[in-house]
Amino acid sequence: MKIALTGATGNMGQATLEQVLKIKEVEKIKLLVLPDDKRIKKLLKKHKTQRQKIEVIFGNIAEKQICEKLVQDVDYVINLAAVIPPHSDKFPQKAIECNEIGVDVLVSAIEKLAKQPKFIHISTVALYGNRNSKHIWGRVGDPLLVSPFDIYSATKLRGEFRVLEGNLQNFVVLRQTAMLHHNMMSDNISDGLMFHTCFNAPLEWVSAHDSGVLIANILRADISKKIGDNFWKHVFNIGGGLENCITGYDTLDQGFKLIGGSTKNFFEPNFNATRNFHGVWFYDSQKLNDMFDYQSQSTTQVWQEIKQKNSYMNLGKIVPKKLIKSMVIKRLFKSPNAPKYWLKHKDDAKMFAYFGGQEKYNNIPKDWKDFPLLIENRDENSKKIDYKQLKDRQKANLVDFGIDIEKDKFSVKELETYAKMHGGRLLSKKVDSLYEKLTWQTADGETFEASANTVVKAGHWYNRTYKENVWDFDRLSKNDKIFAQIWYDSHAKNEDKLYSLDKNFKARIKNI
Image 1 (cartoon, helix red, strand yellow):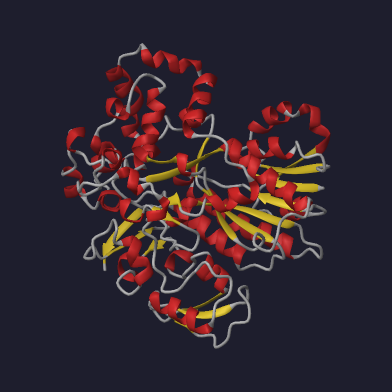
Image 2 (cartoon, one colour):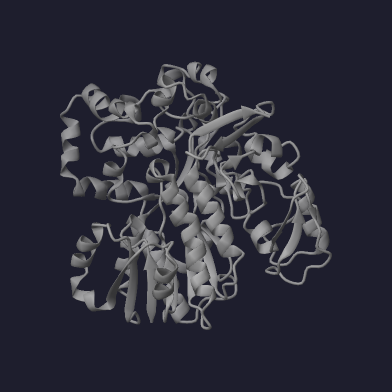
């Protein structure tokens, strides 16, 4: 068995390579690596005993000839390559090149082959956009309302659509949730990205190790012919299970406990955004685990591993907390990715996107005792709730689509009902297959082609974000009953804003 793997030097890529090399049937693994990626030397050294199985191809995923060489004579292509935040914020063109153009080039290379390898594409939870306590549980098929100005989410959205609507014989899309890895601390103390995480954001974590085990177990199951028709050509959420469903506040707290502190010691309520993040607890994360039995690590376990690998963290129990807050946290206010930076430089577009405007930012309680936290049984509006009950999957408040999206076969009438919920229409008059291309019309009168699998099962309803860096959800949600259910959880119905990035990727906002 021969495998092609992109993104091997990333956190999930390293874990995947380690697990896949344990499969006895694997003869060769081709790794696509950027020429300037210095991590490859350390990775090869780690696997020197199996070096004969590894072939390194230096190049860019957006290069046609490189991708054609990569996919030639392999049985599986595993695409983990991605430019993620904060790098996507700093280098948006690279995000477009990798997450969007690169996926197109890679898929095109596979489509040209007479004997196509099976394609495993890693997508992201970021497609679901911002969530809060009102719809804290989500599932595959939920509306894809990528957060304004998030070039990472927008490019991953377009890349995933290309996979789903391509001519691949066997593929699967796996939407990765928030991932804990051993470089977590170091990766998050050099940029203001950590301030984007809403304290009440629902985050379901999975470890890099477990993610690697998942990919390896998929390969093992397919080799053993234990995978049925319910896997290939489908979309799944990669989650870590109920134990790993926490909030943004909890996440920070677990990390700070390792140095004898807490979120309240090092952060203030107005340090972090109150909306425009991405995260959700997966109502259906057990589906993949039932198939491939990969969930084994809790967030607390991974944090302990992080501490063991970073002995310097013990110094945190000695150093005064005020000094850590000043030298480690507040120094990041100078980062262009930090809300305090936007405030200082009068970036009204981002202040509105992430807070609803400066006035709402100014009204954030200054004291933690006045700030509503889900884990303290208060929702975003300070209304009393039962946090334990909120974590009960059986009582989840799910999106209403007008039809049962869990089905694998839909009638024309059902799809017409679904399109109407979006404010649009189904123009096709018959439906013979879940995967055949159908013609749809949006509320704006635009037509697009996509299968019921892509639209209903995977949640892709066409809008401007699919072709340009524009987020028009304020206007669209007025006629779209599916979008409205999620969008209005964190946006007022009278906001009427159009978000966009100009040609230099500067955030813009205007009234509509």
